[in-house]
Length: 90
Image 1 (tube, rainbow, N blue to C red):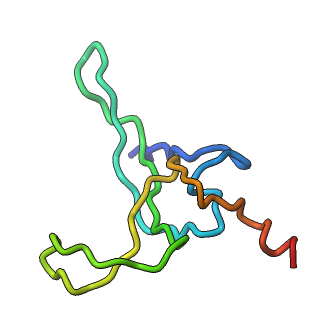
Image 2 (cartoon, rainbow, N blue to C red; image 1 turned 135 degrees about the horizontal axis):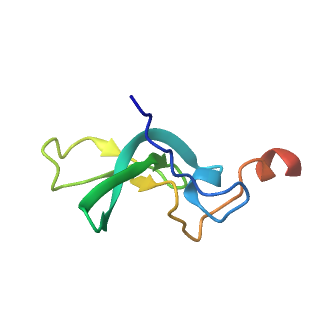
């Protein structure tokens, strides 16, 4: 049995997985179309963004529960702060 490749952004990249607000959560399957059809090429980590307080999604089944947004490891936003920078500044 082969283990799926884990697709992560490189260390130092502007990406959620390298942010101090990232909290690893799960992973999603990543695939691509090829000559033989759709093929799974690996898994991409997902995490909760904790840059801001959790919010309530009124469209969710349990709409009164606050949650943090789930983002992919290679996403990025303006609240980005490199993991470890906060500790170095202290």
